[in-house]
Amino acid sequence: MRAVVQRVTSGNVEVEGNSVGSIDKGLVVLLGVSEKDTNEDVAYMSEKILNLRVFDDEEGKMNFSLLDIQGELLVVSQFTLYGDCRKGRRPNYMAAAKPEKADELYNEFVKQCRAQSVKTETGVFQADMKVNIINDGPVTLIVDSEKII
View 1 (cartoon, helix red, strand yellow):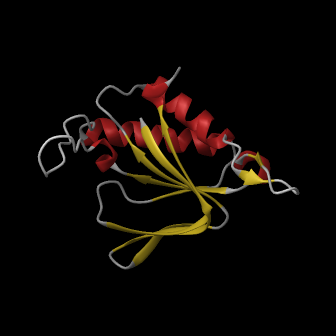
View 2 (tube, rainbow, N blue to C red):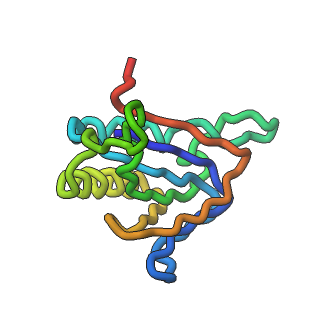
View 3 (cartoon, rainbow, N blue to C red):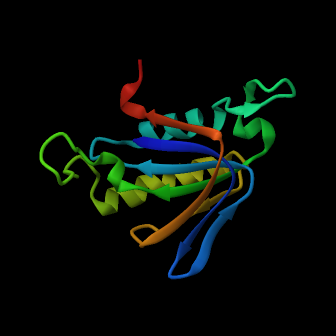
């Protein structure tokens, strides 16, 4: 699994002009699922992202996690994170999971985040979405379950 994680003051997703998910202070997670991913990847990613210390303490140091500040989460499915751009001009998406598997693991990720009492909003899987993000900092990180050391 691969995620682009952005600390935000707000974020929302629109589908066909209608807001389908909206958050205030928290994290927007653009989440990609690969063919190799399993429930172990989901568990790793949810635990890692919810506990990333990217929110400032009273001294301006990033010492607090989303859980610590009781922030909100907006999760948007993003198969293009598995676009391989090394050859040619058109990205190759062969590493991205097929829709059925991607939807299953995406929903499991959302379920695990909600199980931690985090307000978790989503986009609409496979829809044409407009994602509005007010990045705070900016703080943007890439988290990848394959890069476990």
